[in-house]
Picture (cartoon, rainbow, N blue to C red):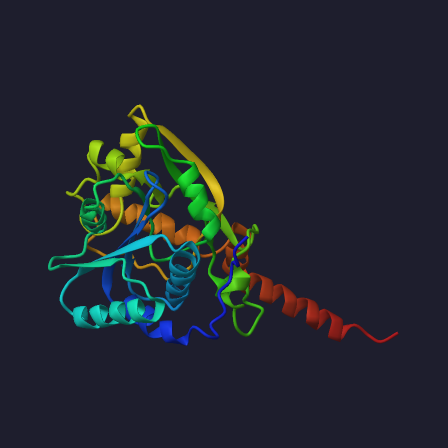
Length: 311
């Protein structure tokens, strides 16, 4: 079973690439080539920000390029700012890892998750069908999951919608510590550490032929969200078998979530719902809400103890 954590020692050279990619609007489409005809394509949109995402890129390099070694990387990059740096970073990765199976597609338009994933899906030009894994940049996955992705899909028959384990805010979960534990120590399934994200449908494994034949994403949806739910409902209404189950090898890493004013009412509602559920467990949130009442009680108890006459 692959390691769930990634030591940073010996991998400093990848931090430059990882940190830079966190700061830009981008979308990754990873085409994981398996023994024909069982190819896998991983499509991965990213919106820059939190420090945990550098861990994602380190995981990507270890799991896909160094362990699985059957990957074609397609980068769909939104905008011109930083494009040259991305090209240089990809060339550096190619040189240091002896990895040349990648394609960069610049897109000079406003970022849209569905649009980016659609571009990634349509880019495959090798002729054979390919199994696609749509994945966001705040997801940590293991080598074991790639096998699960392949086993639970079949062209024209089955699509796979895994349920991700979503980690809570480590500053709340581990608030009694000076600093949260390293990322490898957070990747565990426990009630107070996270929850099964059964309302999320963004992570999915499906064949490219099925994605195209069912009509793909609704490209009228702008920005982030809703398009994955629409696609999921299409499959539910089709003759395909939709496999929906929790998997141990997928973790949603906590990061601060901002709900933009530009979102539609439906998108904004989903964003707020996701934000509320991401922070902490019910018991932890309750302790935060009633913190003042608890502290008052503790002060009273301390005062009573001090005021009690010595026997």
